[in-house]
Image (cartoon, rainbow, N blue to C red; front, side, top):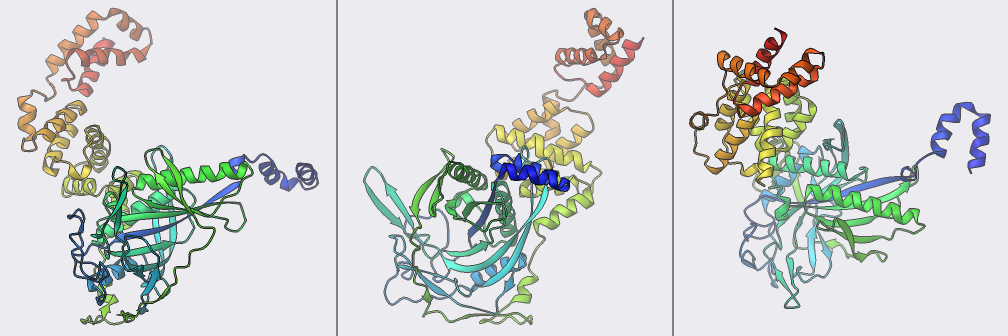
Length: 521
């Protein structure tokens, strides 16, 4: 093969660049990774999809179970209207086509936590189809700049959740909790049009932000409110899709990126070693950071789909704004769509002239975005400096203390006062960190009173600064001589000595000017 390429390159000089790139192509570039997602989002309703049982997280075991959820003979499903409204709202926010008529199916499989032996879903005629989600991919340390990406949505369907099996290794038995059985879900099936784990994680993060804005789902992946299945395969560039593996129930955004990244590497190693990929289901071990086999899919499971006989077709009104007890008006639901994350990012960039990286990070952290808007609106504060303080300094302090930003005890008023003192050079960044540490311990403290009581305000008195600068110059003649001989970099050493000798209590921007003036004399 190599011999023929050399001949072609000599005969056709224009192909030199292409052929050279092909011949010298690194082994990892021979393969193209293809990723598709299936996401289950639990709808934020008071009751379940087909029963009046409470739809909640963390309740007593088997305490939120109706007779229907337990598959007691003779019980019938009654569709929850609120679930349909939230499903339609989500579909519209994702530019999906809402189908005027959708139907319910029974998907048969036999697990201990599925009492009826089937799951009610919408496989063949879903609630909505043909949508798209647009998002930006940006991982600090991985990407230099954000880039736009989109993924097509094949369909969105309503379905009920199963229960939860609890395995006790000590007792060597499995127990079943049916609290989650019958919980309302929407399943979002995406086309296989992603390339890596970072893109998949960015999509999931965007989806979480969207469903939270809509109020459709809490988005709390740690509670299982949103679960991700990822389908991963590798193929040679230009070839059709190849055998895929499915990674089930990934429970965090970081886990999505890690699981897919590992699976791509694993499949590449197998293929380059002459092996073949088998169609199997794998699980993500977040501790060991590897995917592990669960079961193979060499024999396709027959779920024996059949129409659900106890539920009529679901009809919605696509045209008029007439909402009745029996038929939901899609135009009326569409009017309830709030500002979505992409609109928020655009506003931050245009209105406050933030960089796209900062806009992405702020929108990704709703609490910080709320802080930013409250601190910046109707004020003359510098938006970029406020954003940088929130994203860099505040987050760093909270992360060191292992405090989730959602549980930040510092109020927006306290942060605003602190930022004002910082931007006015009345305190420095070190003092800011000390103040936040104090506020975390006691959130009732007033910022100004705290700084006063601790004597943390910067010294700006010209006479004190000049006298201290003279002292540093007199005590360090060698460094001063180096500076005057042209080695200007040692100026920072003098400033460091000044800061250390004053416990960082001087306004260093003012002290720098005074030090420079004295050295020139």
